[in-house]
Amino acid sequence: MNDLLSMANMVVEYDTDRGPQRALDEATLSVSRGEFVGLVGESGSGKSTVGLTVGRLLPPNAHRRAGEVLLDGQAIFELPVESVRRLRREMLAFIFQNPIGSLDPTMRIGRQVALAARDAGDAQPPTTHLERVGLPDAERVAASFPHELSGGMAQRVAIAIALTGRPRLIVADEPTASIDATIRRQVLDLLFGLARDVGSGVLFLTHDLHSVARYCSRVAVMYGGRVVEDGPTAHLFQNPVHPYTRALLASAVGREGVGGHVVPIAGMPPVLHGPAAGCAYAARCSWAISRCRSERPIREIIDDRLVLCHRADETLSGKLVTQETSADA
Image 1 (cartoon, rainbow, N blue to C red):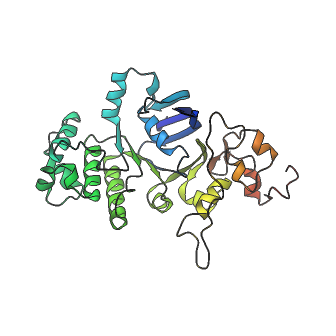
Image 2 (image 1 turned 135 degrees about the vertical axis):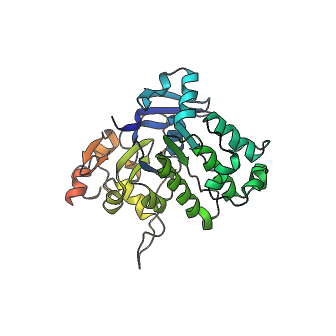
């Protein structure tokens, strides 16, 4: 088996004042060794919960109701705590949205890098790791506290710490969201370049479809706590099958073309308190038929990808009709 990460039918719910809220509704996803996978979708689709689930880092009010996560063949939710900690140290690295918040505010940068390197059995000085991520004046950075760094510098530090152990999988959750737009590409070039150098796979959680197209060989699209389409990035972006994937691409700034316009997705993502009765996207989908509202779609291979849609074959054949003209409506 070539999958480094395999998540199958994962169900995760959060305790809230309004009862349980389902974040993952049988989510299924994989990452092969050395593969760069983009996980995209609107806020609330379940991306961040996937990232936390991968490392068994869910908060106390979150509960796994079903499903499993295999990391290098090991079922992480069945392992004792110490074994999970070892897996995190030896195999995983996390890079989060807020680089300053991910660093210890009471400890100088050099000390934090040194501790990460020590845990990884790396005897190189902290400045070596800081220089590798392109930080000028590494001695000054090493002597600084996190609040004394810019967002871009702090994110480079976070990348340096993440890569000290040469992780097999990096989970990057919107790693440039809080960074100035002028240096986002620099940071992503650095992250994916270094990941390639050390042979790490990357699970890239993001809203940024342009960056996914640039860096990732495969993309998985999430909606309502499920991966609704999963396939090669170039093919999926050129010929999306699921209606939500089409809507997501149409709403992306920069893809509208000359004389075109951005088309926002009408409606709001669902708030699930249990399993969706049918397709979670049905209420916003102009192609939905009665079956979409009452029957959960199952994963099937369509063309070169996996899709969760009752009408996927019609999409590819060009026979898709809208709700208003469909015989099943």
